[in-house]
Length: 297
Image 1 (cartoon, rainbow, N blue to C red):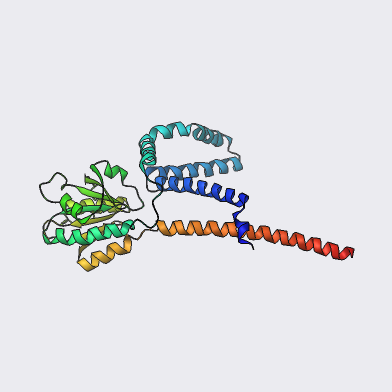
Image 2: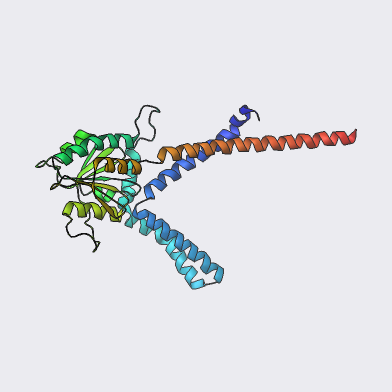
């Protein structure tokens, strides 16, 4: 296979076409995942499946009703999800899609560096803190309850946020990627009846968010200075520095760069495979032509 054959005009057009579709679908999936819109997508899939089953069985009335729901549903969706649509359009206008390669530090490393320095400081001085780190599930609704900051995370910023008697110390700080996006945010309290009665409001709030989302919530006790972490509805209490450091490192590993690498590797393999197949077909045609000429002779 000639390497030049991969970069033909036809292959490049196909590659650009696939990249554009992948880019659009990837961003839509990121926007939908972890929001109310994800539940909507599941509902639409269920409606379509039921509609197909009704058509196959011959349930005319059910099919007609579902057709009306599907036809008029988009109008209702625009009304019901106007906040999500507005937020998505705002993000589309403000986000940076392209960053210079090799000039940025991974966001998880920035967050870990800030936490490594801030948590021991807060713990030793018994400064109460509540820090939520966004994962797959969007915390947009939680962020809206606080004061918007949008500053790069640093230990100094986290420490000063929770210094007592300052405007931002009450409530939770929200971290998205490597940005401190909000402070004084309100977190829902845990409604689990089996929750220990000796938990304070800060711990109940951290556990409440961990029960309803996949966020990692760090709680520093104002009474004891102990560091606890809540995730997936479980509260890990009184962690030693080496324990919570390892816990955070194990869970703050993002798959974004790996996914990007896998996607581009798959695309390159697909293009190479298409070219190889095309060259194979050409070889088969030439072989057939050659065998035909042998028969003539």
